Length: 147
Image 1 (cartoon, one colour):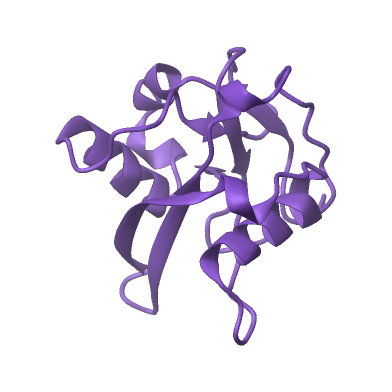
Image 2 (image 1 turned 180 degrees about the horizontal axis):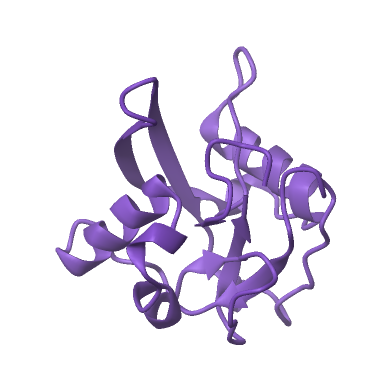
């Protein structure tokens, strides 16, 4: 919604601030976008993708971070704190994301799922993805959003 990934499922995320570490960025962006407060020490680098978008006009290196949600007493409810950028958040399983049509997934998410299929990414549990309202969701997993 309102971004180059508009209309697709994506994870919370954003750009690094000057001098900021990956885990710090991850914790900050998750809190800013969803209200979920997961300390930076809980995060680890999971996967990196090279993403050329919009006919070559945008080129990003996406760093996927993950944490083990088994350490949480329950999956917290994510809030939509940036309604101009996101329609909503839902917890999804890796399997349910892999069943989504590719055109419904933000390009970095497509690359992450391809990494899971070919063994370059092995999730700690199931993907922590929160996706936007309007698409069928399942319980158990992690946050992905529709942009």
